Length: 439
Image 1 (cartoon, helix red, strand yellow):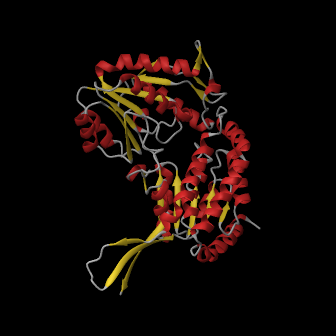
Image 2 (cartoon, rainbow, N blue to C red; image 1 turned 120 degrees about the vertical axis):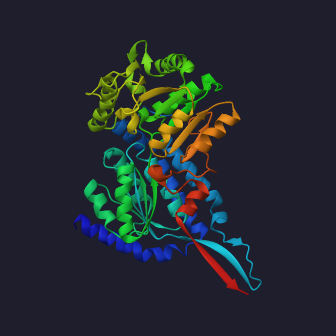
Image 3 (tube, one colour; image 1 turned 60 degrees about the vertical axis):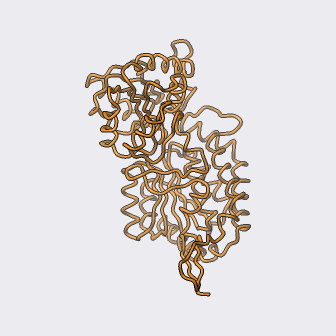
């Protein structure tokens, strides 16, 4: 059976089966989540090996971060699903009736994984999809083939294909899936791919959740806790070798803080990633492939050609797909590294005399997925919040809003649409149905 026929077969199965799943009880859905959890834990070592193979990711103890994130979401859903599924009464002005909302499944949902966190960004969104009673077809990312294979194995072992199915492959598979009339599509990826998915969804009037990215800034003022800012931003640039949608893409700070900040950040990275003067590439992930290596190296070269100065790192090893942690100073705002999301271990640092200069740049750059503010002044924090827009904000820490399960996570406009995490994910993957009963 060819790919198109197989997609048609599975899609037809799920379209029919969705009407059975929508009547499932909380306990039945929790049983599916428990089975999912059981299989995930079984494949912990294979997940670890796949991430090392695809991304050069160092061994993580006691378990890979990507697995831990998914397990936490499963546990939270199991604990609270009975409550989430209850009808929500609403006040009514009519004396002869009662009004309430019920959360019903969207139907058949398509989820696209991302290569930077190829396990968690495919499997974690599946948790609210299953909790909400949907059928799911998953498409792992082809740029991380070992992780794609493990994810597919997990899905096939944990689920009946009428409930959750998986299709591996490249762009041809993705395009074939997008031709089908899914009820909802969930993508983690770039704004460019987000536009393709949104256009495809529009052909079938499907709803979408798009988790994209953007140029996430860190903004400091002179009241910031300096050591905290250095530590958090250093981690916020280098997590997964900078290949994270919430990574700090540039730092904006007063001129008086620039040189001490560069020195302190360089010392932190030297302690973390170097043995003396030797860069130890095995202490972090590598670039995912040669295309992305060349892209990020090109950003450095372009910035230097335009007058920027490399204040730390800057060395690139094409054979091993590694780029040293790099700090750029005096970078023109029209350089590629300041115009595009970097997705690599490069950090431009820009200075301001008045913070309004930063607001102007942010507004021209599109609304980012995250923003990080470092200040002890309430008026400064509130001024930044009033004058900018982003998917989320973390104050005096890097991306601290992301792991907080009680907060929704998502972007705005160019950084995405829709929300997930905890009850927010359950509601995102449900249709909120309004009911009025005459009594």
